[in-house]
Image (cartoon, rainbow, N blue to C red; front, side, top):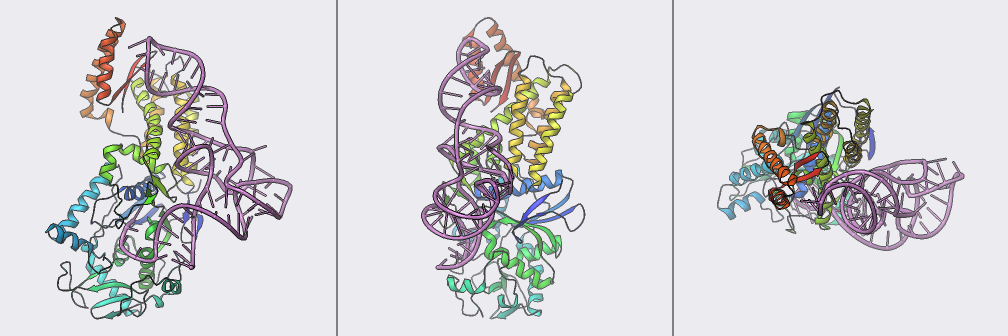
Length: 480
RNA sequence: GGCGACGUGGCCAAGUGGUAAGGCAAGGGUCUGCAAAACCCUCAUCACCGGUUCGAAUCCGGUCGUCGCCUCCA
């Protein structure tokens, strides 16, 4: 089987061949840390989390770099967003940056997103950015004016090749802010002169200033991944100008192809409207997590192909949550049944089903990371497993274990929607014992037809998020 | 105005040439002390029009509609 990726650069689905056999160098544009992360960030980074997880599952040695942009973004007014926030809060700009960086990682951790291997910060790589700008000036791709440096778009004929734009069209749109000192309205800043009140500033060959928004991704991807690397990812809303500028900077500076495969994630709307800082209609990740579990949110975000847009709505997330509960239900049941299952090897028949599921799952994921279709194979497996567990004969421990392992493998390791800790963790052992004690007491009450006591135990456990289900062969419990 | 994406059952959503995966919801059964869960059954011809083809949701043209980007944004 071959892994295929839809390459936005060529607009074709291509068989994936990494630059170096067995190794994948991958860069994804990270957040600007100036505010709380919202569910739009969750979509992008959950989607790429699964891409990375699947590549690793498939045996690739992945080096995953995702930047933290903590300098360089300007408002229309020319004001730095971070500085503005810092002034409002009367703290140092780097405090703002530090605060939101920490919150960002907390949110990502809470969503079960594996951390990137390297999370370089723009502010920590100013020398690299200056080096690159110097190179661009030397090669005639950039020019300095009054302490600022701009990229000369006309010097790079490929400008627009990713987004399909032409410089002439851009000018037609006339929505580009005209800055007098730029030679061409489409030219973009590599380095900006710092006005006296600008606190985030560094010395440079052009005087005190700070880097432009796009240059950090070019400089840091080169530093950690090389001039040419395999996969560049990001949200599609950044295709222009950001991604386009990255290509222009990197390919002009190094005279080498930049990223070989471009993967862009579709945007997320909230109740039909795009979330944006300017509109202020954001739902933060921490707010969403008060309402839904990380697994439910991941399931929702993975139930649409990564390249498609998603509308985050109450009903859609609820639907996904319930779909997830079905899978979680079977996993919980398997784990409960394993405790009292008769010893024995796994049944051949079941192993065949499991292998078939794994094969189909991989076929779907090999096809441009089709997570929703992969999820569907788990749902189909779930129906088969429930059917199996409802049969009179109890399954052997070997069979149950094999099933459990497949869920851990595909649902846990790859999709990240099966909690791997929980039941087995040391801290949970005591809790499990207590719950079983209550379940046993309830069984005694039921045997004596003391329904009041039986229902009281069940209802109060339900209040704590523990669901009891009476099966012909005894009561099992699971966490909500 | 320019560029791009999309339009599949009540909802979400796979499927890019051979007669529509999966989940949610709904209805009917089975099971249960009651419940919950589960199982079984039922539920679409793919926005519209025209074309190509033995055959199209899937290719081409057009129409309508939704969304995104062009300005900070994942």
